[in-house]
Image 1 (cartoon, helix red, strand yellow):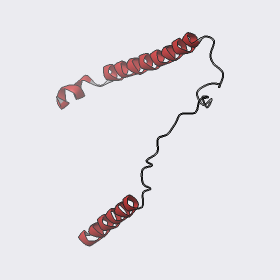
Image 2 (cartoon, rainbow, N blue to C red):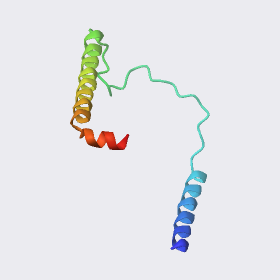
Image 3 (cartoon, rainbow, N blue to C red):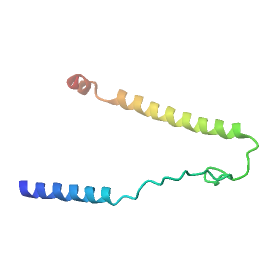
Image 4 (tube, one colour):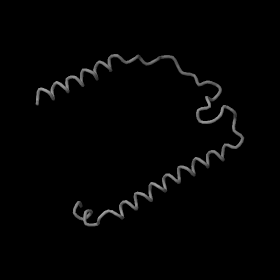
Length: 88
């Protein structure tokens, strides 16, 4: 069993070392941002009402945080009080 474990560790370390040695060098030239946006998050056209988009995203984030908080509060309250006493 020890021999197999040592063999597996040697394989993992060997693969990790070979992948680290095979990495491409970091480019030295500076990356310049294109003048036009790519359109990944939105269209390439300038927005007419940026605040509406910002508030919509803030509302979505608030709903997600609130929902997660309510779920966690309910989960903690439903936990058996006896288990909480024994684990403390």
